[in-house]
Image 1 (cartoon, rainbow, N blue to C red):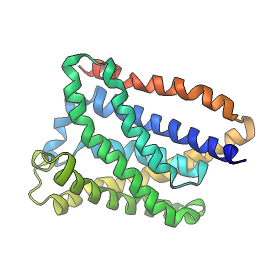
Image 2: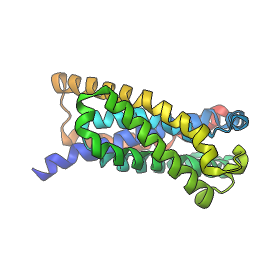
Image 3: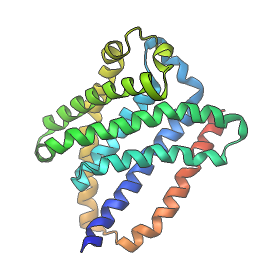
Image 4: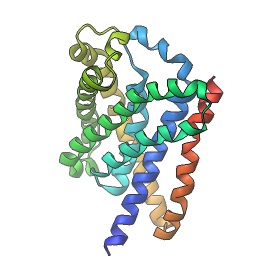
Length: 238
């Protein structure tokens, strides 16, 4: 019985995490890596924009299907790690750039996942019934995520980010620009992802059922697919 409950959770963490990581790899770290600087004059970091866009939608879908906020932390960790899986496939000339860019991106992914997991754990019952609650969860988790993100990056993993973006006062300035975008994007895409998750759950409950054995058979193939995605995208954008 315990295995029957755990298998869908494990499968969901890997699949949703790989989807999120794949989308970030082929956009932020891949096809768009030559155009990051167009955001800088507007005091915007593409790493948190991509995380807000893809992460809120993917995590909203996961919440609708599994009703398990703790899963979001695992999904974020898988998404953050999956970006590095493509490194062995890359030519030497681009590996250093990819590593450096992914530090801020992975930070945004993890803090976004942890923040939404925290907020949704208090609102999970309301999320099932109320669209305004989903919008509110997106706004609140975006506020928490943007606050943690700028503090962690400025004083920890990527200290140069505030200088690049032109923030004289890291936290207040970022919340006034990047934080507003983060909250606004999540307010829109979290409910949209939740609705998509509900539709998918309804479809699969009616037309199909994935067995644990079938799920495990596909986990390795999914991971390998996403491992090479960043390398391919980087080549396209080179």
